[in-house]
Each structure stands twice: as structure tokens, then as C-alpha cells.
Image 1 (cartoon, one colour):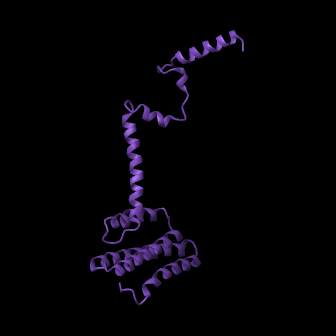
Image 2: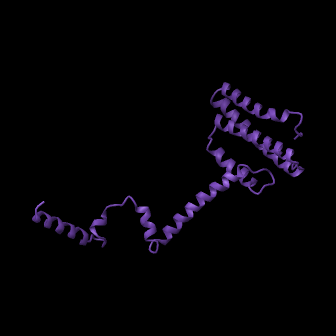
Length: 183
């Protein structure tokens, strides 16, 4: 490259870096950076509401995921059991939609409640209050199962409805063992 060509390039570069657009920003920054998110943290003094909002969202996502994971193992009487049965399970069920997937989900909830009874009984922690709570949830789940099964039978096929019923029967087989306490 000749010295004249270098001089022309230097002039163009100087013009680009010193020119400003109508908003007063340098012309060189008119292009969006792929690292725009990181710029948010560099300008935290000026963009503090956005920075705080982003930080809160990140903390809620991480914290909420941890609570949801811990609540999956909760038993009646545990602090997170209410979160499990009142928030996590209904939200998960909502993503199942309607029909066969929802009926299978309700059958799995029946199985979960029965496993909870079994665990509490084996640990000697099953009292009348916990038994009543689980019985109420079992009634709720079996009613929801019946409704979902009816939807499957009406809108999908009787064969699928029978398959779904077999899923529930397999879950209920747990309760028929003689060593389990009666519900």
C-alpha cells in the first residue's frame, strides 16, 4: 500500500471515529454489538434499573428452580409440601394439555400419593392429619383422572381410554398389598 493510500485510510478512520450522528453518538457505534448484554453491566450507573431487573430475574430463576427441585421430594408435614401440591404439580399438569397425557399424569399423581403414604408409614410418621390430607388429594386426582379419561374416550379412542385405565390400575396395585395400612 502506498503512503497516499495509507493517508486516505487514516483520514476515513479519523472521520468515522470523530463524526457523530443525530443522537450525538459516534458514527462507529451505530452498529449493534453482539455483546450488548455485557454493556449493560459496564454502564450500570446509567442503566441501574435494567441491571437490577436482570439480576432479580436471574436470581428468581435460579432460586425457583432449586425450590422446585427440593419440593419434589417433600412429604406431607414438610415445609415444601404445599409448594409441591399447590404450585409445582398443577403447573406441570397444565403443560400436559388434555386427553391421554393428562390422564397418565393424574394416574402418576395417584401413584405419588400412595408412595407418600407408604414412606410415611414405614417411617412411623403417618398420623390422622397427614392421612386426611393425602386422602383429599387422592380424591382430587382420581376425579381429575376420571374427567381426563372421559375426554380420551370421547375425543380420542376407547382403546386409549382402556390403556389409561390400566395405568391407574397399575398404580392402585400398590395399595392392595396387605402390609400397607388402609386408607
